[in-house]
Image (cartoon, rainbow, N blue to C red):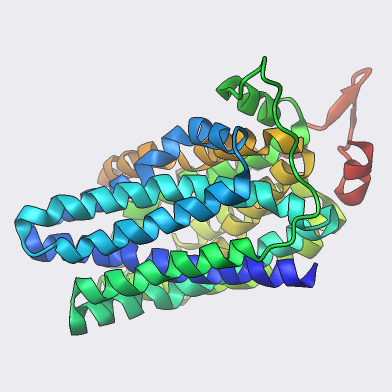
Amino acid sequence: MRRNTFLFVTVSLLSGLGGSAMALVSGIWILDLTGSTGLAALAGLCVYAPTLAGPWLGGLLDRVPRRPLVIGVNLVLAGALLSLLAVRGPGQAWLIYAVSLAYGVGYVLIDAGETALLPAALPPARLADVNGWRSSAQEGMKLVAPLAGAGLYAWRGGHVVAVLAAAVPVLVAALYGALRLTRTAPAPPAARPAGVRDGLAALLTRRAVRVPVALAAVSIAMSGFTTAALYDVVVTDLALPSTFLGVLASAQGAGSLLAGLAVGRFVRRRGEVAVGVVGAVLFAAGCLGRCLPWWPGTVAASVVAGVGLPWTLVAAVTAVQTYTPQEMLGRAAGTANTAMFGPITLAIPLGSAAVAVGGRPPLVVAAVVCLAAALAAAHGGRRRDGVATPAPAGDEARARV
């Protein structure tokens, strides 16, 4: 078990290092080649757009052996990154877009595949802990990888960054190959091929899965909705330079890192639904704290938001892994990723439009939405004969399932 835990956390560290560095460098590279900020922003869209295809890509994981597929996807990504060596001028900028799109598709497949592989490699009682440690590893890399990637790009150019980034998925593939799987998913019946409806059913049938995924979807969407508002609060309301956003990003990252180390214990004690509710409330508190006309309060609020957001995500992922049958985990994980991260593609432009009335109103709206979702989840327990009964928590719920 310790071996597999170490391998999964190391995979998260490496993936966070390569992915975070290339996400920033791709935009900078396109900006230098074309001189257009709009074209540079499209690189990020290419990475996130495949999330909308999560149910279909996740279904692929239920049709073929998962570990070989995840290893193969990583090796293909390494080859795609090496193709960036052909970029010499604006005429080859399309290659960066193509690689970003491949990265987005690979991310969906690998993330869903890893979600499905974890229950086959670890006992159920350890899933929340390992998910939390993986979250901390990824957030920790987000603190250093973008700076390292940008510094390396400024020193030696995009080709060197691409080569180093290509080495990461090769190492990750080797780590996946070293996993010791104790359980394997049975093949789906030939008469019933994997479908999107099955993935939706896996999420919607049980409250223990449906509620944490919904809370994560709302919280992540509101984090995108408040992006432009936070910019406005810093520059207009607090009259601080835009570089102060880097301080807030680091504060939120530090909160997320600490949150990942503690979330496993809370999930075991209180259950995924309760942790999702607390995470949504903490994120709402962070949004309200960012409305304070005092920059130390804004920094503290960013730490609180950084604790709440990954708690909702870890609770949702753990719920999917715990309550979904092995043979459906690929579909369920892919559908859950779309449900949680798909709405942010709409929330970001809505938030950009809402900031026309000022930075603080969108933050208040986001807090109200998250608090309403948390309140609905907290009071939406099982009812019998008109009397509310609290949902089972932690190990008791898993035993009943």
